[in-house]
Image (cartoon, rainbow, N blue to C red):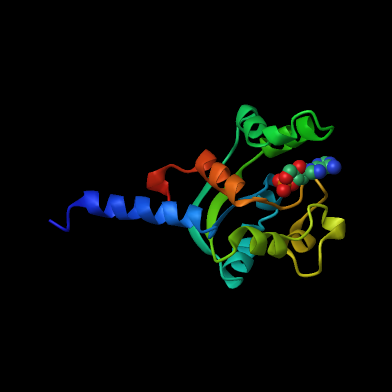
Length: 159
Ligand code: CMP
């Protein structure tokens, strides 16, 4: 009876709810230029060595429509159209990361949005090309982490 797959689905569903409620997940993308430059490996190494576990991950390419929807909060800003074009220009890595205090700790690990202002040793300082091509995206709140994770991953793709 306990081997019934429905129980493991219920347990996973419960775990995913707890991750969201307790602020232990964040969402990241490794952006097209960083993927092209073969920085996937070094960036994932930094993520793991900083105590984050990978709970979902895929290499994929966004359509312009998907990139526009993902970054809809920036619609109307001068950089929006060019950001959408860039983010749909090549493959990206999308991932859900788990750790205590995930959103804040991951933002510390990646550094300031503008790599020119990013602290030494941060992912953006090491691997960004410029403000737009700033190596990685990281969620800026627990609420957005939930939305962004759901944008890329179904229940069955999350662990
Ligand atoms: P990200 O963390 O993915 O969130 C929004 C993205 O918009 C940001 O990283 C940058 O890539 C980009 N961005 C933010 N501000 C600017 C700006 N002033 N000029 C160009 N791109 C920007």
